[in-house]
Length: 178
Length: 119
Picture 1 (cartoon, rainbow over the protein chains, first blue to last red):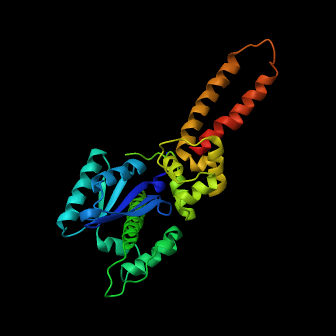
Picture 2: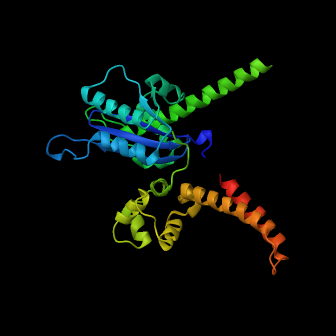
């Protein structure tokens, strides 16, 4: 059995035509990471997003799936989210949502923007360093690899939040005892 | 909900090393990365020589590369060791009686605690 601190989670950053994922086993151990994209038109992949999400859940059998909490969703992202939640419910895997502020709070010294968070993540998790894209120029579109860092930030934020709540509950218990 | 270890961590260690499947395949002596992909996705179990090549290529012991499989095998061995210890205590053989305490000591010191330590 795995220790509670080595809990296996799957952090997913959903986009309208792709999703980035990072599988964690504990806050510092990465199992897998990558981006799956779903182009339109002649290059449309034959395997739909829902199947790829299901395959990921099957491969890692995570105890939790972490997603970004959003106020509004585009139609395609909502479809993908629904497919994911359906698959997770089928496998009895809880889905946790983290807001943007929740992610920022996990990186107190470097939360100016997503690029500073990505740079902090590359230091924290050296396996991801080769994937770190250059800071986007204003006239360029975002690098597809940023999706991996967004997902990794979700995972790290989830663990730090969990640790905080555990410490809080521990200190409350001690205070009640005393 | 599961909290058991994965059957293998080949993909995690390979990605940590930065090597591609075809590069690892070359190190293992295969022509393409197809075999590596099958081993990573738990479709096939590698033969002993390939498993040892994985250990040499990724610089990680087999018990860590195949942590989940090792865990289940270790549990079975522990269970059998306990049964064997009981059998040895109850058995009354004509030959090799003097070896029994040594065997029991070996089983309790090596087999049982080793399996427990890994869990």
